[in-house]
Length: 294
Image 1 (cartoon, helix red, strand yellow):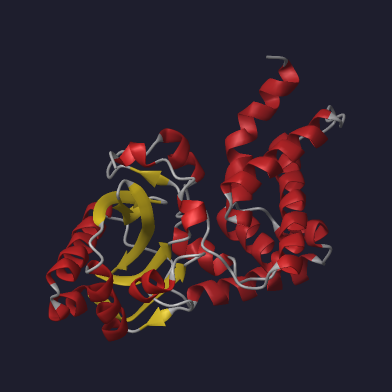
Image 2 (cartoon, rainbow, N blue to C red):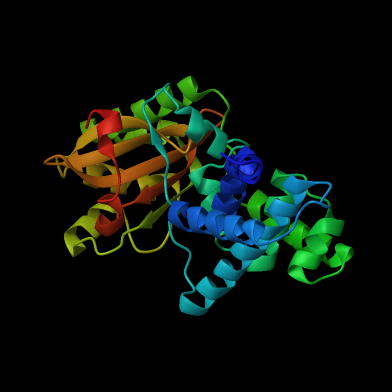
């Protein structure tokens, strides 16, 4: 490995983490990192004092272009790509990618922001990049970049995105939810659901009957509504496998060995405040379930 390649590889994990938070897509994040490598390889960086900062700026510009292109093709946010691990056995590469609480709930809310807002928030609030360095990327003044991040922060704080830190306690709450769903125990479900719980689902091309079981095309809010849908969903007869989904307690359901859904639970104060479900068959087929023993 030559010196130039070694220099870049030293920062690859960081660049992938930035791009994943910006894009919510693992494949697009990898493409952004590859484009960053191409630009790095074609540029004389001998006079660059802070190579990490320079590379962060490049991958951010690439990601911003992807976000802007994406906005011209669709308007509705989608479920981000998920990272699966066995409970208690986070892969070291995944741990690096998911540092700084990059849960599914946060990525879902990030996808509702404008591209400049998302970039300003991700770079400043997650990676501590100064607004003076963010400003030229979004073609705004430092004060305008600060306002972008502030608007994004208010939007994010208005949603339940930060889980309890104790993953074992998260698991207990999720297991209680799953057991109550299987048993059809409505009161037990209400006991583990926050009154303002929200369920968001990416249904993809799921058949109409399955959509009715998993939820609706839009968010479902409120403990009673979520509990009723959970009881219906439990009657489909799926196998449930505990998993870590982006570092938080979650579950993967399968039918005949094929993934049916992935659920990421946000547990706060001992209650489920959010549940994000990936149920798009096309995307689910890309998941490697062997790591879960499924």
